[in-house]
Image 1 (cartoon, helix red, strand yellow):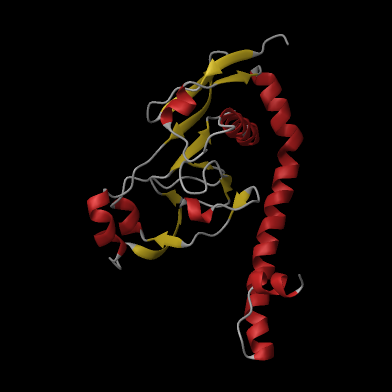
Image 2: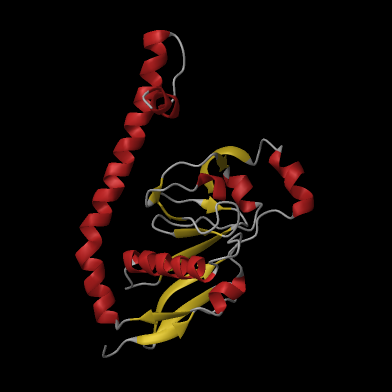
Length: 220
């Protein structure tokens, strides 16, 4: 295909993915508090239970977008760790735990040291970058066939070559799927709201708390 280019994803932190002389996106792996301080910091009320979602591998979901996280941090907590506040649309890839899970941040979030974050440069479709990340993880899983896929390490990305189309095709792809992604986000937010409403109503109806998972098991 004319104009298609193969490039390896560099791995220094942060790095820039280059193709056709332009920038496709940045990839960062951020470390949070050092291991020896993590337990102490975890118990510090000034750092946790704030309004800033804190994405970890345990928050990975099967849908494209992640809306809520188990933990959250305060502004002080964010300023005291190495993670930045990643904007809405940032793509997270889990490096450990639920290895290779991919989610798009539905709102600004921080993340822990077991994840990678990809953000598109100006003019590059975040939806194309999302699919590029899917292709990357899919390749790594296929390469690990017959062995345990238990981590995504820096060399996995550094040594992987990806096919990058010309910028005009990336732009065309983004404009084509833009509404599909927006509809997916709207549906995800609606489902979150309906789930919260269900969990609020059911205890009032029968005096007990019933979760969606319990309802699903009851109908199996």
